[in-house]
Image (tube, rainbow, N blue to C red; front, side):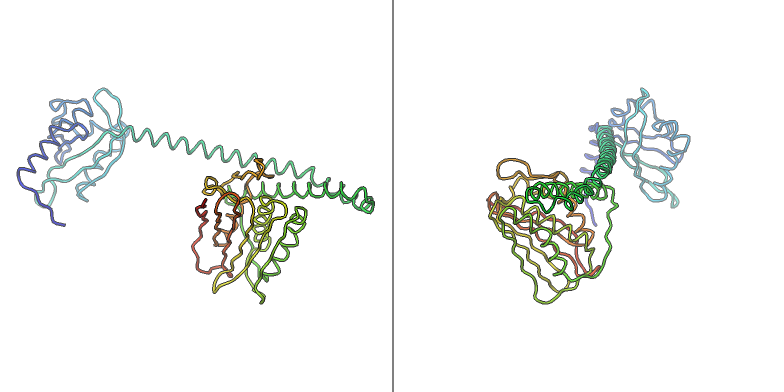
Amino acid sequence: MKTHWNAEQAAALAEVLLGKTQQYGLLFYDTQLRITGWSEGACFITGWAASEVLGQSIAILFLQEDRARRLHEHEANTARVLGMAEDERWHLRKDGSQFWSSGFSLALTWKDGQPSSFMKIFRDVTHLRTRMKYLENVQHECNVLQHDRNVFIGTIAHEMRNPLSPLKTALELLKRQLGEHARHVQPIRVMDRQIDFLDRLIEDLVDLTRVQTGRMSIAYETVVLQELLFEVIHATSPAAESKGQTLHQVMPPVPIEVRVDVRRLQQVIVNLINNAIKYTPAGGNIWLTATVDQTHFVCYIRDDGQGISPELMPRIFEVFTQAHTGNGERGAGLGIGLSVVKEIVSLHRGTIEVRSEGPGRGSEFTVRIPQRPGSETRPENIALDSKE
């Protein structure tokens, strides 16, 4: 690239850099690393006047431990070999205080094929270093809190499993002994539903810790898509029927074989249908539709329920994000299901999208997953803007 400037412009630039700017320090030094030139900015940043540093080694700027490692020589040698040496490190002021210097050394003049003089340009960016260190500390604290939260959640899940197992056993005994008596049917159903709810809650907590620690994995097997989805419908129909909702299904007429983690994919669809049931009023409708193209199968879970507000849409897949029910209350659960769903879909190298035209206008989740591992796709999880 060609550049151009005239003598007047060059002189003006030199005057600004050497005598009129305090933001950048310039110093010149020879092959013996002795300072031969010192700008106004260098004086302002370091506190040394030119008369105090001329003839001194550039090592005067370096910390004692850096001088011991001869890093001032290394910087000059890098400039000699490469023509320029970028450098960020702590430097010294005259009063012994330190500043974070960001700059570079340049080889200026040449003699017999070797540089004979150098220039170092530097700037005091201690404020930026301080901000960076602050952010590093914040990140470290967040990592510690994240680890502590994962340990806490894992401990809670483990402790909840201990009493749940005998409760399941006791309920099964009650079913066998009292299940035929009409007055016991309803209480037993209530206990059954609540134990199932606790079981799902524990699994969500365990899966959350797996997601947060990157330990969630999938085990592929070949299955007929329609059969997998029929099992999901069978598992979720009772909850829909209890609210007087209609669960519609539309499947391809020809069996479609896919290779997925069956248990995990069922977990995805069950979670999405249960969400639709939760946020759809009594008597509403939920649709599960499946289709297939050349490389992927697609599942749509749509409802005519309360919809998703524009404020919630960008955070819908975040941990502990939960919509309010129609009566202003938060729904049951902890709001971690969609975060787990997103992770499972991503592990399948698939995508999940959500659409909603706004409160009261229903919502639709679209899950798109390769029919076979390795099918070309770009993982992403998208919350499309809602419309009022």
